[in-house]
Image 1 (cartoon, helix red, strand yellow):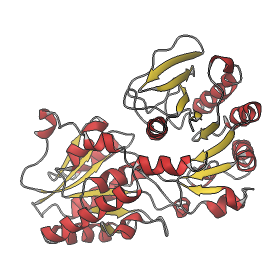
Image 2 (cartoon, helix red, strand yellow):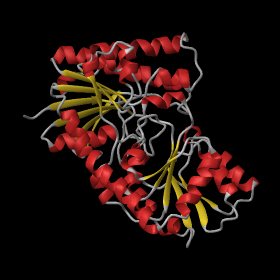
Image 3 (spheres, one colour):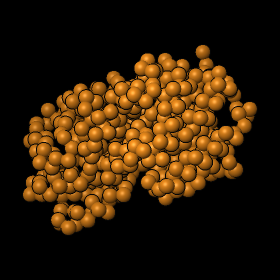
Image 4 (cartoon, helix red, strand yellow):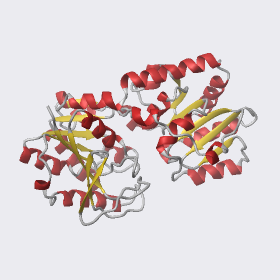
Length: 405
């Protein structure tokens, strides 16, 4: 039976505009099941590479058969800007004035964080149209603010965000989390245990199978005849890349090992300064590449690095997109994240797991992989690709959502 699905995700995008892609990928899969999908998104995100052209408060655009409704939202400078909260509030307030008679009424409404505020819009519409309400939590807010931002649990902003979080847990028909170990956390905040569903991130097969070759100028920047330890993604504080460069310093006399960091972010200048200060010739920085070229880049790496700061928050689990891209590339993975029982690299046996913020252990791990036979490295890679294809394609993930409808 055909479904009409509304997805509210303020910070969603797609290939045309940039991150975040999850709602776009899910929508594409829902359409394959003969669903109609309307996606409500904000017109401005600091993660967009291009901004949609808007006219008035609501602009409709059809992208790959998905009916995008862009809600005009104000500019903010960075993810940590206080204006971002205003950006979120404006999105919520404007949705209350959207003329729902212009589109077909929904059977299912999915509200996806980061912003929690539109849970009010989603709840109101679910009652108005007798639609099923699904609350998707991609990160734990306001807990992230408390644990990573060192903000008091009594801070007005924390209490304000907490109201929307608990409201969603109470009113939703189902709560989907990308974090495997978040169930007890949510139950402690009012969620009925039978409403919890774990649906992580994954890969879009059309995208990874249709990877575009690297541009010639990018290929020329890659060192030849080296054992490449590679990273593709945001060069941010959370990604713990300073420890990778500390390992590069420790291994600077091993001329066959080279480190490649692809991307941009708030920490890039600091990381480049470290390399220059220590005169490291075993590190190469490459500017961001289009997402459709990521798999082509990963083919050049011998090992893929992923790391996060050592934070108690990650005990609830993690679901970084790049991990699944790495797995599909069939390359061994250096996994430097303390995510408790939620360790897919160990589960899939597709690389080495190392405690974060431990330069000695990371350096030893790199050296171990460098001295590992090609056959063993290939086996790690095959294990990862098999695991992601069996468990983390968006076709499979959308199927789990569909069972909730």
